[in-house]
Image (cartoon, rainbow, N blue to C red):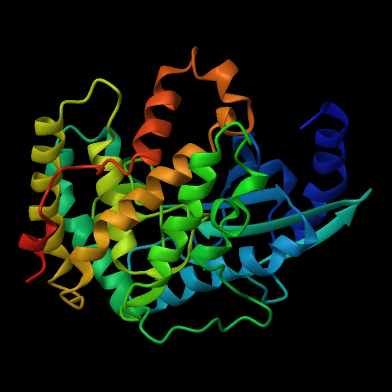
Length: 332
């Protein structure tokens, strides 16, 4: 964001949006200003997180859908931050300033430590699995309560919807594999489908005094519930070009043993979920590949200099399993 746009947002939109949530400007403490502006502020009910983000007007229903689902989960007893409504009773407030569409929402602030920063992170896997299971159970039959709210579908992701728009033409095999993977995912049994967080990793789980809390729902969409497990597993294993297959397989087994033990305390999936896991892992692998800055550049130029991207590309093109594990052992 350039300095002029930043100034427009901070002087034109921020005061009005803060006022709509009953927050005084002199109470806001900036804690992040990368793509969005995130503030901390005291409130009558306790400290809150106030997030202000510039976005296209077409994005508003999806943002509202994310916060609406969070409200549904919190009402169902799931450990997520509670959305705070504006003075007019809205989950999200928006304003247009000099052509900028700016949205804002407010969440209760949870005191805790990020999962990835916990020295005993392995001990948190089971409770996170149970939390994921409860999220899925509470979301059975969910439909947005807020007028106009919606969640996107997994197939709306640009690398599935129009891969040639996000992958450079110098990588035709990657584009072809995107189309093949979408077709394979569409053939999966139409069971255990619903909203998923889709970004369940150590930076999006707070470990509070009462247990893990899921935060940051920006990637939420509708998909097979097993994709949630695949996404969490992907980030736990987190392979690099130097990863040893045996080590990755051991980490995957360790993770799934604990995660699924916790998950099954809250929810049980159709036993066919395990057979879909390799596809969901490959879909997560594709999302990392397609969102890399290298994806839109000529591979002849970047491939020689970015070893990790070249390795990811080769793995995806050749359908190399993310981990060499027989997932059927967790299907019972």
